Image (tube, rainbow, N blue to C red):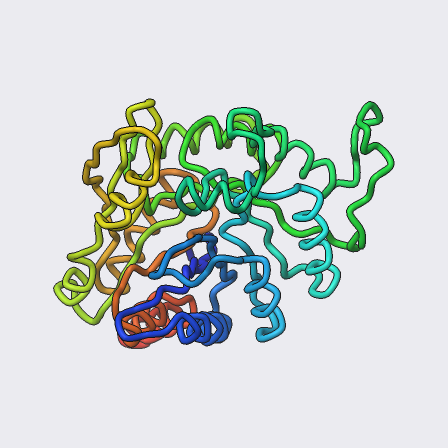
Length: 343
């Protein structure tokens, strides 16, 4: 058997004809099925001011999901730290870890989860962006709080993010660059490569190699868009409209999003000019065995310890069916059937 775990990333998509409340209820149902079907973890994302995605508060949703499930790991994929106080983030996840030991995953993202205007609203500060605390400084402080090991030279040296749990949450940094992987390794955090918006195989290889070189004991996760159906043709039809777009701002920065309309909205919200290019997404689509073969290859090629599956399907029933077909429980049943048939 191939030694990697499977998890799910759910963005609480508001599909056509669905309310945001219904999308959140569907997330709860999906988490319960994910547990039943043998997935190891279920993560929820953070997106702001987005009518198509209802998951704006992963820490709140994670707390509810922990109460509605029993064994599966529940976490954030991820909390966008640039918006928040590291102290508050540590407190929230310490509470969750105190309530559900060994089941809480804290995933931290470097992005914004929305538009420049939402960033301003979340910070609600009179200070301009350029004068605000850097992500790495916040990340460093969060790491100290989670390990209850604040530098003696800090003004916060006597501070504790109570309640201190017996088992701290499992910590993951999300990113799509070598720099992010190196940061995770240096702080001895697990790293999650956001492959669903970045399909560059050479970059993936470099990220994996650098992370494992610096932190051999760390766990390297890969988020991939993956869809299964009874036939390869049916699976391809489900993802034919899935595209990613990169917004190139005139100040040299970029942002990658799902959907052309979202890319334009993101660009228009900025104070600089922009251009949009379509990105290659490389969705893994096929029968369950075909998808598994690809995951097996990625595991071997890039030393992937776990996959987090993103399911970009615009139909509730077909989305649920895909997740079921790729589940550990279903794949085990298929293997048993194959072995019985062969003997």
